[in-house]
Image (cartoon, rainbow, N blue to C red; front, side, top):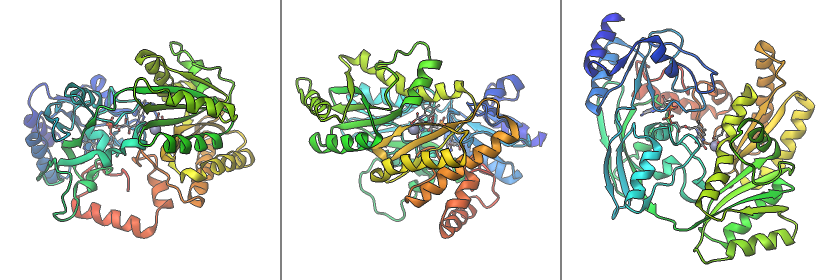
Amino acid sequence: MNATVDRLKAIVGPGAWVTDPEALQPHLTEWRGRLHGSASVMLLPKNTAEVAEILRVCASTRTAVVPQGGNTGMCGGAIPDESGTQVIVNLRRMNRIRQVDALNFSLVADAGCVLADVQAAAREVGRMFPLSLGGEGSCQIGGNLATNAGGINVLRYGTARDLTLGVEVVLADGTIWDGIRTLRKNTAGYDLKQLFIGSEGTLGIITGVAVKLFPDPGHIRTAFLALATAQQAIELLAEFRTRLPESVQAFELISKRALSYVARHIPDVRLPLDDGYPWYVLLDVAIPDQSDALERLLQAAIDRGMVTDAVLAKNVAEAEQLWRVRHSISEAEKREGRGIKHDIAVPIGRMPEFLVEASRRLTVQVPEAIPVVFGHVGDGNLHYNAHLPAALQGAEFDRLALRVTTVIYELVQEVGGSISAEHGIGVFKRDALAQYSDPAELQLMRTLKQALDPANILNPGKVI
Ligand code: FAD
Ligand code: MLT
Ligand code: ZN
């Protein structure tokens, strides 16, 4: 093992590897502290050729490799196992924007670019890269593709998968596949890039990306609404989409409890409305500056009793304050204590029924569970999370947590949903994927893994 580590260190050179336990620590722990691993070394390659050389050595020595971006993932996929034999390949030094083409509405970047830097590079040429999520100041574009990240603008622009034009990938044997294309149409054979998007580091290491840019949407209006029921949120969304076609950029649902956690744990965030309403919606619409269409739609909704109260941001700073509330929920949940996370997709029309039934079943089957619901309702993607009383620890916590998850996933199956809408599988949902997937689908996944990584050195133990 030591000889292999020495060869790997020599590839990246001095200053580009880490073995010091203290410096390694943040890379061995999932950001909520739910998973701890060990590694023989963390390598920080500076270019694709070095990644290829690393994988050639790892393939010949059967050394397992864990690709890592910003380590903001939700499923433990970027954390090595406890054996101490795995090697982390962290992409953070590969952070160059390679090309921005305003006329072609495309951008090419190293996979280690931080998402916020990709957004900024697009803005510099008057374009927009719409992928946006709470961890955007730390997560990397390669990690976003590897998890097929979603976030708040999927409703209008799609997920990372929809935003990708091409990828550059290093395969398990060290082969570099240069799939960087900035074409809108390409039917020359299989669409191989899609194999790597959402593969969570198990099929190859993404080293470069080509993504779509969009026109700057112009003036964005942001509103924070209070509602009596989730059904009203779904109906309101349909109405907004009909009356303001192609304008709704984001439409997020927040439950009373999720908002109260923000109030309790994030002191510098001011709540725009009292936290006593059952549900809230935070929305962005792109409409011209002078238009009063949003005001008129909201007033009509209030008059019909569909919306109970509303706050409209008067300027960009106020809009950012409203979004801070939404983006603080994950951190607030973490401070509340150990939670149970779900990242489910359900058909949007069945969401109200799902919410009522999930609550009913939990009350009966796991009365200790405290649901914390929020999410990207416009995409049918709910974070149907839950907490358990703090006194429950260890095996007792695990037992009840599994029961909560089983209740939720069984209901997800019944309504034709998915157990993972945007966070992926990693380690935390690996058993659930096996349990809830169609057997033929699982076998296809195994066949692909076997074909692309026969020695199982790429992120072993993750996804399947
Ligand atoms: P990591 O966490 O480092 O890795 C994630 C997985 O991808 C691992 O399996 C890893 O092995 C693999 N990987 C990383 N880089 C590469 C690469 N270059 N090549 C191959 N494999 C690689 N996600 C959403 O979808 N929507 C949200 O709204 C959202 N909100 C979030 C809010 C907060 C506050 C936080 C902390 C996270 C949120 N996330 C959200 C999670 C999101 O999936 C990740 O933040 C992000 O997409 C992962 O990027 P990363 O660089 O941190 O990857
Ligand atoms: C978010 O949308 O904020 C995250 O994806 C959800 C989470 O932390 O569960
Ligand atoms: Zn989310």
